[in-house]
Length: 174
Image 1 (cartoon, rainbow, N blue to C red):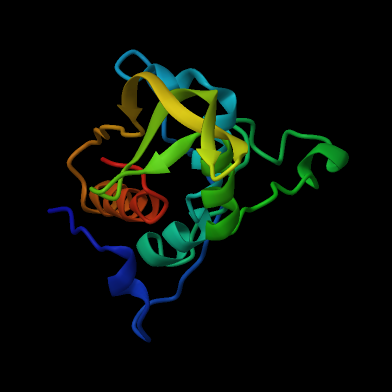
Image 2: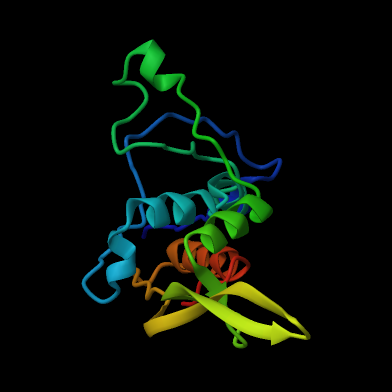
């Protein structure tokens, strides 16, 4: 009968580990039907760079994997194309970028987008008239959130949990 051995079980002195590269790609596919904010390529880029893919490979696959920056395997790309390194953002850079796109963190810790307009506000302060700019919301807010669906395997469920955790650190709800 077949025996199932998981990666964490083979990292012992009892086994010799031989590896080979297999063209298997796991990805997170964005469906913007339920949240139109996810149509914005800037948002997708920021969310993509908020996931520490190497951490996922190390934690879930015990280092047996490579970060892919494209659905095209690096073995197919030219040497120049395969050398293109994706810039990683720090948590602070991600937060700054989301703030600059008007995604504010609410009391619940989740970022929401609200269109605003600048209105000049004039007040009398003593004998002087002071004019300031005030930002006011113009409509509904939309939370920056997503729902993730995966197959029922230990590894992919663990990956989903890690992604949810990493996204929540920058105010994205799941």
